[in-house]
Length: 127
Image (tube, rainbow, N blue to C red; front, side, top):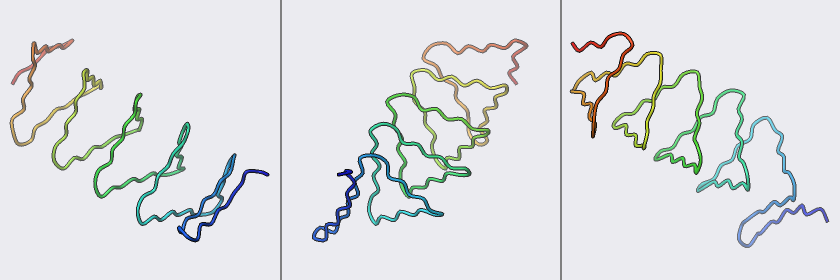
């Protein structure tokens, strides 16, 4: 036998599709609706490719976790946070050709457990 199986469990209202190799769906649009949860499990990789856009939305939280690195690449990036933005790391480096830090309403605090060092190849201005 090929190992391909379609099991219709009328008693428990479940359907199981099994293939020892690849299952392919070809169609114009593919929609999955679940009144509760959707779970993806892969023994190795999960690849998502779109020729145009990918949109994700959650009414509550989105959690992303990686044992290794998380790498993002784009032409532009905008982060819009309605309330608090918090970042924690052992080392944080940001490099850009120009940087602007701006507090439009309240004070700005730059704090260090040791020294604060300012270095400029030209000059430093404190207004």
